[in-house]
Length: 300
Image (cartoon, rainbow, N blue to C red; front, side, top):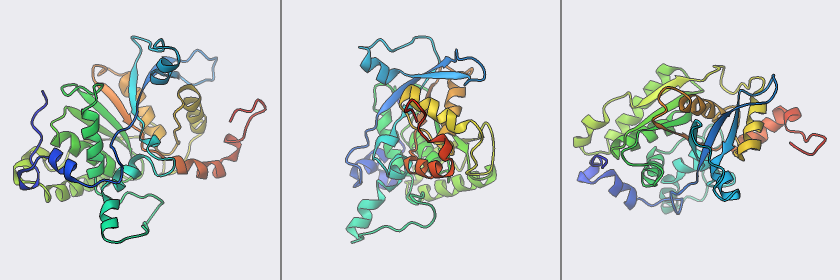
């Protein structure tokens, strides 16, 4: 059995607060796909790994797509929540938009990039609660959550949700836009804000910092820069698994998940949160049109 959830404001559990909140999304449900990591048999130069989507392969082959003994990880398909406003953007707006509607708002103007992270991490905590109830995420199982980090809000929300629900989950965030010190400052700030909403009994359980394991990208670079071969890697993943990645955000989390599921700690379940990025692909197609043009056989 998992530990009792942390008490929140007024002695209520976090689960009570989540169930009493009005949400934008009618359900926190999301698809979870299992990805198998295989050695690539293509001649050099070629990708180091090949991938198979065991979830869709099993459906199309009558359950024969599973390949036992190979490294694997799960992908939480929040990119499928909505055709455009999906991923962590939808999660962060989940609790905010109903509040704005009640106050008579008809339009939302963001400051910064389109769909920037402004809402509190409570919507992401709702996702954690949903995942913890799935049969594939056993309550007592060690789970290693991987997510790309722009502002870091999603990562902190995931970690807070895991702690408050008494889950044995570790959150690893791949830093993309700032230094370790700045991400740690953001983490402390969000934790402090969260404590302001919670009953004092939960403060010692949440702590002050250190909930998120912040890591550099495997190939560090300035934010937004795309390295050679990364768009090709995204195309490979799309062809082999049906999952769209972008080279700026979600490819970084994918690479980290691959490394973790092949590492020494393979007894822990690895799950990547797909943070969306559909709109970003349109911008990339304008920056790198040669990588998005159809080939002679009609493939993109």
